[in-house]
Image (cartoon, rainbow, N blue to C red; front, top):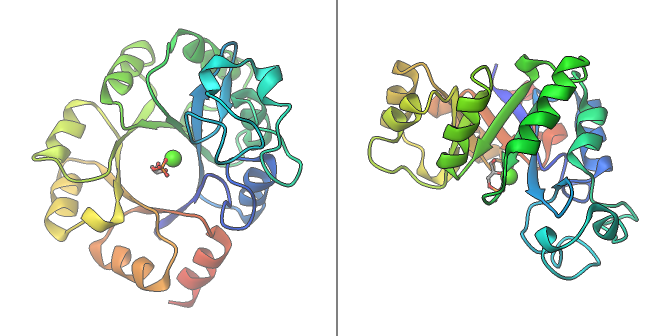
Length: 232
Ligand code: G3P
Ligand code: CA
């Protein structure tokens, strides 16, 4: 069965990357939840953009503010921007947590936070998947945490991308659905890599991804996607 990942939580129904979107995805019993991680001055926040403007009532850059300042703003439905720790607390080991690292930031504290959560069993190694468009970050992270599953994230198919992802010791490739083709999926599979497509919401796209044989899809509507999959 193809895996269903809630993209920014159940973000088609709740404000993206918020507690309600994350908890709804947990309730739906998705195979995984994808959220975006940005660093601020003193913590890691779950927010997609570098700037607060699009998704919150605040203005300015996330990395110029503290957690306390950022959490004063409304991220939708009177919710605040979650921290990474809050998100780990909510998801726990109930499902896989895919942390997408946005933009380059110091990973030392990130590694500490992950290790601390593993140590107290709040998070298991199997339930963590870290992805990024920034392959240097992934390489660095893999050196620090050799056990961590990494997802090589791309918006297109650079030449020999599956081979590159294999050299990166990725376990999966996360790719824009519009660039997938049979040849690419076959190459990735032959190298032992899973292919996960984003962002797949419509029935016709779900069927297309099944036809390509991808192992997972990121969707803003996990509940609807699961219903469609059950009906096929
Ligand atoms: O991780 C897959 C997908 O979320 C990457 O694109 O812009 O939605 O973060 P974006
Ligand atoms: Ca993302």
